[in-house]
Image (cartoon, rainbow, N blue to C red):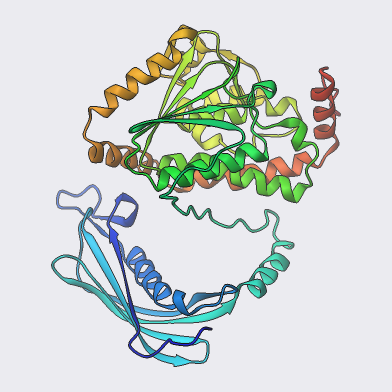
Length: 409
């Protein structure tokens, strides 16, 4: 640890209580109440203590919660501002004790004590890696999106054009039908961080260069990856698409051609989908020898289990008109009208009150519940299990050789 930490060191952390921070007491009753939940309050207080320690940690150190005792004193409604304050009360080597309080704009709502331990992150990582070898799905670290309030770096696999509060993103690998490889994955992550740091951007239109929207994951590249790398890449891709639900911007997919596999997930993860008459949709992974590695929750929430089973078990393509009937897209227009129609919709949305639009999007996505979206952990585990088998090797070879695969029985 760096020198300087002393008794009385404090830090504060503020939170606006959102729909994901509350619990519904007496749901279904006439006088039910929606209030800030105790687990979320404890998390806020712990994060305030972590903030107090951060300036005194070396680059190889982090602090973790070791003990917490909290009283929840008063209720707080949704949308209130809550402030947590953590004050150092004891230092015993690498164990740091805190008094912690939480208050809203009217009352003290919580108080307690908290102990944090300062640890070496490399040692923790080694222990986790050792443990992961014994778990069937490995250990999946949560996505931590660090907002970028500065300029967007130049991206290699996409073109980003900004017009005030509107951004148009064009996937730019036309020779590969805009298939998502490691570079495009990194570009998406960079874009997401930039959007998180620029709330004044309100609408994002996503489209593809050339004749395709997005043909899915780059199968040729997948065939070169070690299973551990394929697992990490699949988790990153699942997280980047789920991030669009949590970002404040409204996403519009302007589907100008094929949207297959990961490309279909890409479109499904947007808030609106406008498709050209000539566009086609499919979840063809089964024809390559594996199940979808992510995106099943988004697909099923849009079109229901029966249609999702149809698409994923047969791998069949459907037309834009069929996709409209399935509820997969909102509108079907001539190809020349896809981007203009997306911009018309963006202009309409820009006339709506910005904060109300953000809250409405957040509430609608949160109302589905967070647990179903964690299904991608199981999706990826099944995908990796199949990717290591002979049928997947045959599927990749057949894809590269442009022939029908010959799977085993």
